[in-house]
Amino acid sequence: MTPRRVQISGLKGGVGKSTLTLNLATVATRAAQRVLVVELDPQGNATTLVTGLYPDQVQRTIADVLVGFSEGQDPAELVAGTVLSAQDPAIDIAEFNRSAWGNLDVLPANQDVAGLALGPAHYRDLAKIMDAAGDGYDLILYDTAPGISSLTTLGAYAADSIISVTTPTANAVGGVRQLINGMITPVQQHHDVQLIGVVVNRVANRAEHRRHHDALQAELPHLLCRAWLPDRTVVEQAEGYGLPLHAMPGPSAVTLTDLYDKIFRYLITEATP
Ligand SMILES: Nc1ncnc2c1ncn2[C@@H]1O[C@H](COP(=O)(O)OP(=O)(O)OP(=O)(O)O)[C@@H](O)[C@H]1O
Ligand SMILES: [Mg+2]
Image (cartoon, rainbow, N blue to C red; front, side, top):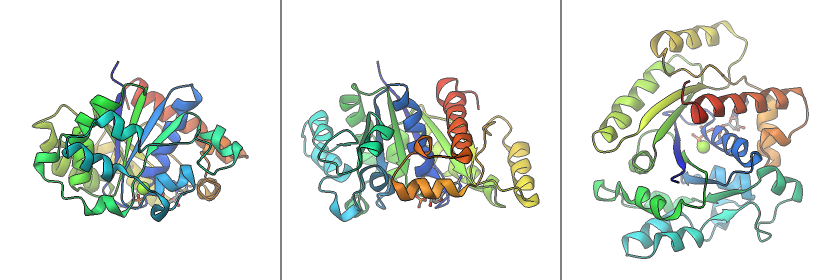
């Protein structure tokens, strides 16, 4: 069966796309599913968080897979030769971290990805690669760089669903609209992909956050995810330890883990935000 393929997108940087991607991934790995996170961001944050490897320490990346594919190499072999598994003993992380990530593979990225010349002729390449290489997975997630680029477009062509992440700021509604008009609608002319929800992250107990959240609710009622994520320092602590939230101690981590479970259920299992 073809696994669900979900892209996590957002116009702005630092809103929590990578954090959401990896914590949704572990909702699935904790349920004994096999998950692939494809990093479509030259920053390589998702790769670093899971593997402890900095971008310049990563030998092979999604760039090698895309170039190899365009040269006619076998996509399944390319992916198998490039993914990094949290379970691989060659990945030098603590056993606690290994078991916290579960059966998670990452198709890594670094600056090499930024150098790819990706025009419309390549937009279906990632989709074809995932058609050939995705069989062993129950879920494929694409973590993206902020904004709209040829890389995010490539991911959208390879996805059945898109989740947008935003913080509760003044331009949140405008940002989602720009993502829809600038990327999702154009891709939909050629490929069936749906925006399935907007997740609001880093919500503080402040009047202006409530106001911007209300604006999102009023403007995008059928897209706003019922579960939103509070701003909690434990998220940055988890990042520092290279762990998903479910492996962190304390009540805030429990709250967030419960919310990631809910977001997974609403958006990925039930597809009703
Ligand atoms: N709910 C939260 N509470 C507190 N800090 C958070 C929360 N979500 C994310 N963060 C922190 O915010 C920072 C940015 O998060 P993240 O890297 O996931 O964003 P991003 O959208 O992927 O960024 P980029 O656009 O650079 O890829 C990180 O340091 C992360 O730990
Ligand atoms: Mg990121």
